[in-house]
Length: 123
Image 1: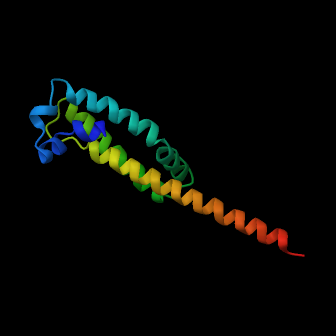
Image 2: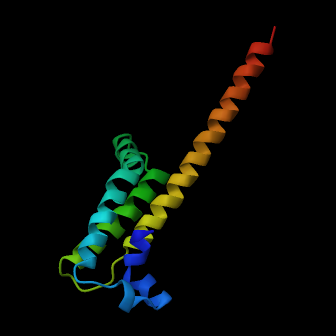
Image 3: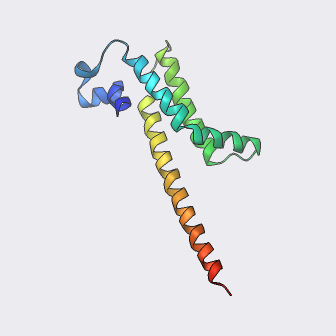
């Protein structure tokens, strides 16, 4: 939520630029987003390395590429390159992907548990 509130686009859409903008807010936004990228994005970055090692890019590669481009481009904007920051998009994408990953793992674990019970019932 702090990343959303500090994002210039969200402030503009909500009409809160005067209330929420302060000197150095882009650096605070960068620091918060760095935590989200490196901690929340780690499963996707780890998956990227595994997929590249086997030379079989898949969904983790796509997600890691998307979050990395958003993070590094936005970081460059904070430190002087002209453009818009995409930190709120980065945080939202990581949150949604982590939620989807968690739901997927939960359903896989449930299905494997059900299969184990079926195997135990076989004579």
